[in-house]
Length: 266
Image (cartoon, rainbow, N blue to C red):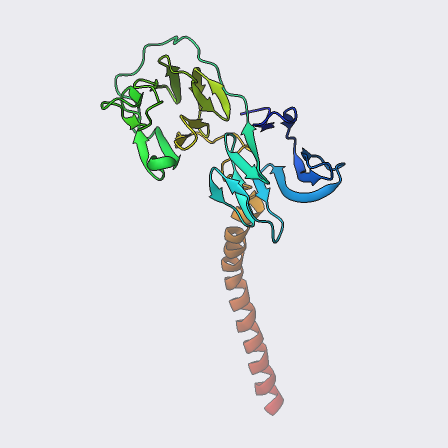
């Protein structure tokens, strides 16, 4: 995922690119919500982008901040595709995604069962949906991901695994789907991409042997350096090697003291 940006759903302002650092969102004296350190006004939230991920910070005492419909009081970890609601304004975190490409090799007969969609919103929240076959999304009874909404298409889209990626193809829906906050009808999804079929049904692609690209959303932590992982065993090994020398020195010291006592008494 690249080119992370903040999109105003009401289009009151142009999209704002989010580079590494801290981005202040304020309510200006004019009443408009703006983004930038140079703006003067009441601080609403901060969005922090670093190599560990993407974070939302809410000032103490600030109320009415929601991420994907859930209230946030202090801090929340974000990912591309999340919707932030603050001070009656809806902001959408958007990022680019891979376009579909023609398959150069025949698809394997049995996709890896570890490639899944994990529900992060809506009635599928907390559930894992394996992509062992072509998965239909829609209002139809046979849909593996069923959205019970009269305006939702019976056959909205389908998903299938291509190697370590997931191909999304639209089946003629009215509005398509959101991938990392961007409306699309076809996309090649990679680990960490967020897929939204309507405002409530949210999923994240999980490929266990592939790390999602940071800093856009997953809880990637800074790796422990070699000094932290290797130093303790080396110190322990060194301590073990010193034990024989310490024992020999103690024996020699005891012998010397015994000799002094023996000859001193004579």
